[in-house]
Image (tube, rainbow, N blue to C red):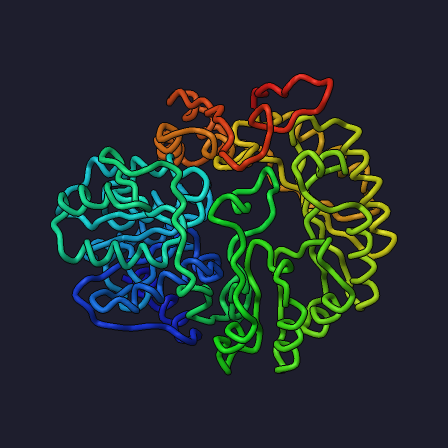
Length: 514
């Protein structure tokens, strides 16, 4: 059938442009699944790291699978979902291992299971079906909505756990395997056991995570990604990747980083929760640029920037400088313990202008507890001030409280309120700065999935089956009785009287209807 041939031909054309693809025959085969399209999945450092680790296991091999860009063609031509390396049917593999980055990728997981001819609900699968496993960044916060669909949850950093899993899976039948994993730290087997919200920590010997396959067909075109540090030494109240999640920041010496960059890599991306907190970051940047490569850095912290650091980024090809403010006003930044000031952000803008950069990108959140119109007006004033130094693009996301953080349990501000804040920003900055907001509606869906239990996963399945519109999600949450879990904060040594920061003289904020 013509459509089926074109699907395979498309995959083969992308494979032909890859450098570093692994192929291996082994008795235990893992279909490594990413519930977003190829260009997103291949930008995931964790996904690529696990791909390498499976291939490093003596008895196992991995082939990649992604959410198709053209799902309807698969359905129309009745083409079973197939792997990239061999174009083999996913349903014939011993294990499907999903890497789930965030809540809204649940729909992609459902679609991939459905296209594979597998029941979406784990209760409807048995020993005839592949083992369905899920891990990834979502397990650092709230993997509960995944429970109805997976046989095993791998929680936290998985570089060591994947070997434990493969050893056990190759030597046990399904029932014995599930009973065994339910007792092993780092795994959770829905209905059988395993600690909730456990975050496993990989051994230092597994660091750093790095790209295995370089391809031009990603969000970060032909860029080799590597982490100079893992974790974070900071304690921002809203962030899952804070110092208490998995033991703080672990740095990798620049010498090791440089030794792992392949000769053919012309673009290098330094990735992590707090890259600019690395004590030798400028030295590392200079060495990469001096080798004739372009370089990019994620998670720039305004309080860590210097003129020399920004100059090295410009030498490495950067034309924009990106920083996160994460609070509409200084009051809001102080509230969430985001330790930087307006002065530091202004200084970063001046560094960028001096280095010859063209634009400053600033990420921010709106809808934090206790936020008022005056805070939004302060953001307008401050962004206007920045725009006099350098053109500004302001990325704005509605605040979504995550599990495993001190702001766990904080309410969503409400759709109307968030949309009013975004409109106030647009009007106030019209002609002064570019405002790039994310959807308030889909932030609310993300919030419900982040703050509810397995019932929210079932609601996600209902919404997916009903077409995936916002109305379908809203109806599904209501019919499944989904109520945000007002959790206690995690233990981190801080003396806070509630699950979110208190402003003297004001009552705690209450949940607002979406």
